[in-house]
Image 1 (cartoon, rainbow, N blue to C red):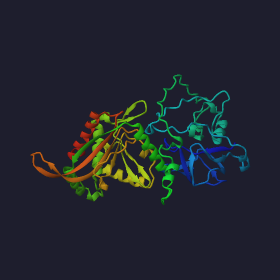
Image 2 (image 1 turned 180 degrees about the vertical axis):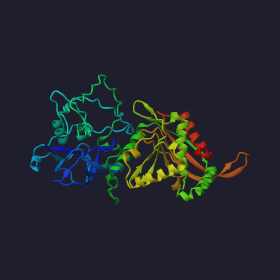
Image 3 (image 1 turned 135 degrees about the horizontal axis):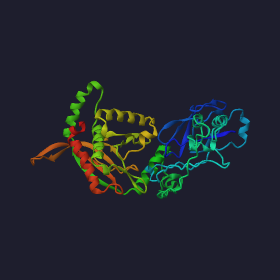
Image 4 (image 1 turned 30 degrees about the vertical axis):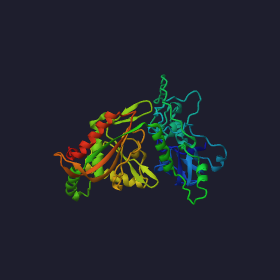
Length: 436
C-alpha cells in the first residue's frame, strides 16, 4: 500500500525547513539508505535518506518550497506491484507524532525517553513494505518488534536479524512520567512580540525603503535571543586582563610552530583558558534545564562565529584536554564550515558556556546575550595599550583586554561567577600553565 514520506526533523529544534532539492524523480526505484533530497534547516543544508524501499509514485512538495512543517507529507512511495494510479486513493500515513520537542536550549521541557508499548490486539503496526514482507517470510510477529525508523517505524534492519519468538514485547513502565516544566508562552508564528508590521509600515510610508524578508536563520536568532532576554535573569561581571605575557608567549610559540603550518591566535588561548576554568570551578560548568540544572563534566566550549544573516556557535568538545595547536586547527575548521553552512547539528548544539569575541573588530567591551541553555557567556573585547599602575607604584603601559561575563543567575551566583572569571584571567596572565 502506498506510504507517505514525511518532512523529517533533522535536528532537535527543527520545526520547518526548505525542500532545497530533490535527488529523485517520480518513477525512480529507491533503496533504503539512498539520498532522496537536500533539506535546508535554519542552520544547515542536510541530506535526507530513504528508510524504505519502493518506487517514487508522487512528489507532493516541489523543490525550492520553504516553510515546510516537520511531518508534512512530501512524497508518496509505492510498494512492489503498485502503480501511480494507486496514489489517487489516500496513502497510508506514517505513525502520527507530536511536533519535535525543542531542546532545553530553547527553555522548553527536556525531552524524556519514550515508553515502548507493544502493538497488540489488532492495533495498527507501522512498518515498511519490505519489513512486512521479510517478517511474513520469517513468521515474525511485527507487534513484538520495536522499530528503529522514524517515529518508531519498523524497517528492514529490525526484522532481518530477528528470529521467530526471539523478540519480546517491551514492558510498559507503570510509573507515570514526571510533569514537564511549563514552557514560556510563545506568540503566534513563533516570532517575538513587538510593534505590529502594519504599524511600522505606516510610520515609514512616506520614506523610501527596501523590505527584507526574514530567512530561517534570522527568524531563529530573533526568537531565541528575545526569549533569552525575556526569560533569563542576566547579570554581568567585568574584569580587565593584562595580555603582555600572553602576547610574548604566543610570539615564541608561533615561531616554533612555523614549520607545522600552525599559527595560534589570542582567541585560541582564551578558549583554552575558559576550558581549564570550567574544570577548576566545576559548579560553573552548568546549564539550565527547565526544572533543574545539569552540571557537565567535560569542558565543551561554544564559540560564536558570524556568518551571513546570523551566527553559529560551534562547540569544541573536551577543550580542556586538547593542545593549543589542536584547538586552533579545530576552530579554523568549524568556523570555515560554519560560514558555508556545512556544520552538522551535533557540531553547533550543546556546551555549557560560550565565548563571543569582537576584539578583532575593534570593540573594546560589550555585553553578550546568553545562549540558552548555557549558564554563561564571555564577551571579549580588543587588547588596547593603556597606562597602568605597576607593582612598584609607578605608571607604565600594558596591553589590557576587557572581558564581561554574562551570567544566568538561576545557575550561577555572583561569587561563583567571580571565581570562574578569576580562574580565566589567571590562566591568561600566566599562559605557561596552558601547556601543562
